[in-house]
Amino acid sequence: MTATATTEATTPTATEAPAKKTPAKKAPAAKKPARKATAATKAAPAKKATAQQAGDGQRTQLRTIPTSKIDRDPGQPREHFDEAGLQELAKSMAKLGQLQPINVRYNEDTKRFTLIMGERRWRAAQMAGLTQMKAVVMHGVGEGRETFAMAVAENVGRADMTPVEEAKAFRKLVDADYEVDEVAELVGKSPAYVQWRIDLLRLCSEAQEALVKGQLPVGLAWFVGKLNNHNQVRFLARWVRGDFKSARDAEAFAQALHTEEKRQEEQGSFFVLSEEAEAARKEKGQDALPGSLDLPDEERERIVADRNKLVGKIDKLGGAGEILSLLAASDPEELALLLAGTPGGIGGHRLRIKHLQDIATKAMANLRKAEMVAEVRASGLTVNPDAEADTKTDAEAEAAA
Image (cartoon, rainbow, N blue to C red):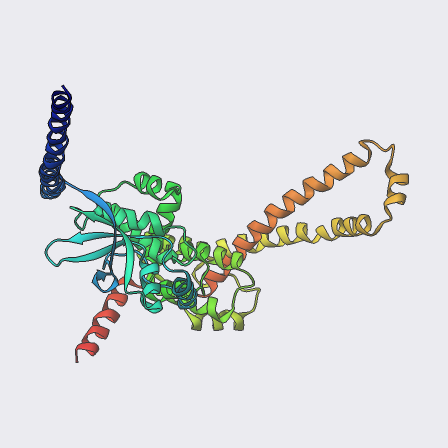
């Protein structure tokens, strides 16, 4: 019985041993198909991604790519980069590395990458000696208005992007069938701002250069851009010489000059500023009537009569000036004692002065415009269109010779 018991006891043990070994042997066999399945699983998405890229589409991935394989986008809206700013960024990248990835598109034909956003970082990375850069790589995206729109949206509003660069970028988007309102929404600006920038492209090359260099304020540049090229150049020369007391005077002069150009155009003449005419005006003195040689005797007499009346009234402003000077120099406590209880009270007198101040402000603005109109007419030269054409023809002939 002992043997039997031993046999019975041993039998289950023997039976269990192979049972334990069998799964152990099958386990590795089970792992091999698992590995094949894993390989198949990895291969499947790769094939799917390739098909997606070749088909309808676009995919994006974050990668580290060689800096040497990245090319500048020739259509990049920014043309000028501050060298000192780049040096500062390069030092930071050399110490801390690249903190923000750039955006590029992959070119299947060249196996290279073209920048969409981040040229400043790319330039700084080259200066810092970085051989690799983190980049958001866009596959299946070609050169087109969408990628350019992305570049414009990223750069517009940066302090180091010039108004002319913005203007060219907006113009390119409009030429790519974007409406001005769409461009404005894209870059987060008003439609008026976008159109205002585009209008700057009417500036001649000299004026655009002055604007880029900061020699010509952008607000004034818009008014200058409305002039013909001849007058733009001559206006710019006066501005650089400091002939205007302020930017507002220069702006009023440009507006008056544009108005005179339109008036002359309606009469079939070409109007241009002339330094010789300015010298002649100074010789005549301030009493000369602008364009008086062209006026009939009757019109000249009317102007002289109306001038005397107006000047007589303006001379009476001296009395108002004396009153204002008295009020300005008086002791406030004395004014309170003298004017309290008078009709309207002190507040009523103050409102009257405020009304005069508002009118005086408008009168000053109007006189500034009048001064510039007189200046334009006194320093302008009207050229017969046929003579102007002949002058151009002669100049072209001389250049050809």
